[in-house]
Image 1 (tube, rainbow, N blue to C red):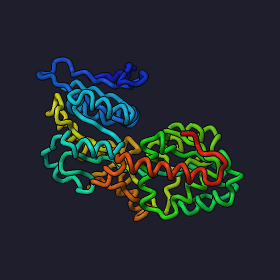
Image 2 (image 1 turned 90 degrees about the vertical axis):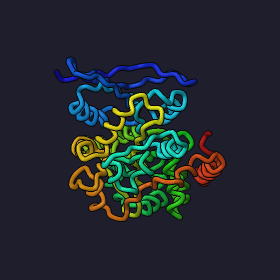
Image 3 (image 1 turned 90 degrees about the horizontal axis):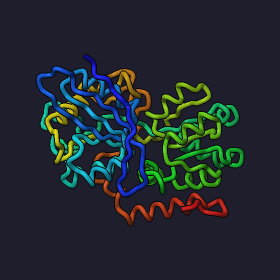
Image 4 (image 1 turned 30 degrees about the vertical axis):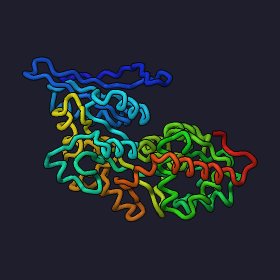
Length: 360
């Protein structure tokens, strides 16, 4: 009998206002000689996670599988409050995941799949990147028809400097003060591009709208309220762009940050054997084939080629793709003094050409 996945809403309270939590549950198949459990907490929306869960459960119907979809902050806080609740953590908040592993909160995965995983996509054998997701621009047809298509950060800066008045309120990007993703991209761009602060100033002068999620930006672009979105997560943007012919997805040609989702098995995982099975599936060829074929997340497995893979993106965009390094530099993003200094400068540059600074 096939397991049926059910979506439910739960209330989650961690010293914060109640939040809706989306979950999927696949019960163990009736009559299984053994019945095991597996609990996965992830910051990955259900449409992207469901194909992986269904494929894994089809291979292991004896496992009662529960997936809870949380935002990155809630996932991290919930783990700190109950480190023995989940068997696997999946998050795009690379600094927080690295910090947990570096702090001894992850257990090693000793397997052939783990040993063969690319060194640049893992930390020791405790933390594994399993997706390859460019950070992109999304542009509406109205902007392209009037001003041309900005194919790089340099072209975007020129566009804003020349036509900022015409684009006033028509550009949307992350607010790094209220978005972990936005802050991570800001600190990476400040390291990589000498013109980054000029771009921040130009965004401010155009009175760009500041958002906290890619979904919020995509809604406005889809409805036509914005003509250009800057620094959206490409994996989430691709479906909206594919469904709306007025939208174009742009992978900047000068440099494109690439973020990756990181998975780890907590040291106190209640079902470590099942967690190892799932993580081996996630980084093994079967799971990576599901990622390539059924999601826009970008499969990392070195043997995979063609649509939906990191290799295909590299073939198309070459050296422009700049993965955020998986290493000690991630810890710098968590340093309070460095964070305060970067955000103070960001706020100052964004308000350079305006009379008032963005509200804190």
